[in-house]
Image (cartoon, rainbow, N blue to C red; front, side):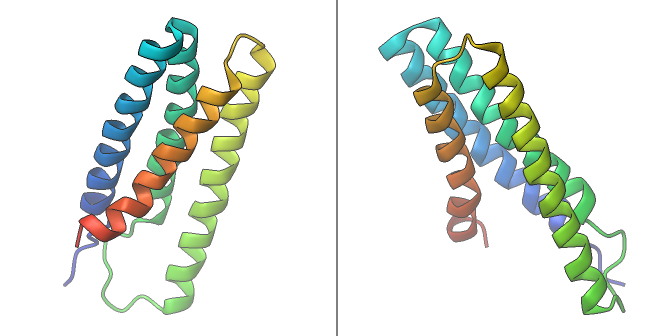
Length: 123
């Protein structure tokens, strides 16, 4: 019986996202101060929480003899949940009014790009 490798893969993806988030947070603090760093933290945390939600919903305990439609359905549901979680967290940050929008978006973008970097780095 095959085991689902998605959990192990997403641990590596989230670790890479955390490293990129830390980089943006440090840059934001160095350039613009602690409010910018908190904004970068909010943006990157939203993306990483979304990735955790995706990994939790998309994984299967067994992958032998699972129909392709079921796998696709789980991944589509996981993607919708991830997008919803990210939007809710970003809207919460936006409604607070204390953030620096540029750093929030930069952190979200770079942290989300970590997912795509992982595709090329992690095999």
